Length: 139
Ligand SMILES: [Zn+2]
Image (tube, rainbow, N blue to C red; front, side):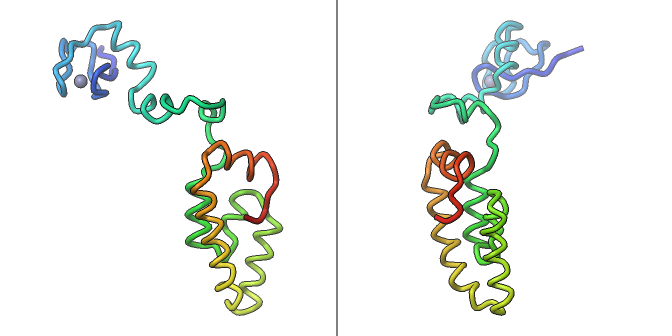
């Protein structure tokens, strides 16, 4: 039986039967592949550099990119409000858009666009503190 691991150098999948990585030629030893197996390189690249706060170690409760894109694309329907848990604010936007037969959608579309840009320009930590752990339904 061969266990699949990752090359410690380039991150390509290797098996313990491989003496050398098929991708980059780095020697594969059992010990190195064990270490690499525990921490695949593609995760180190994303999270290792910033190293700030415990938020990054936990799964993100809300994704600011998703919220930002929802705000920009579907801002007039308040979808990003629902996504962030601001159901009242989202309902206001949705109902106003529906009851004005879309007239309010122009205004809310601009609000959503601005809010989406604000979400995306904040750091992950700032975004979570502002919109997830505290309650800030508008902007
Ligand atoms: Zn390799």
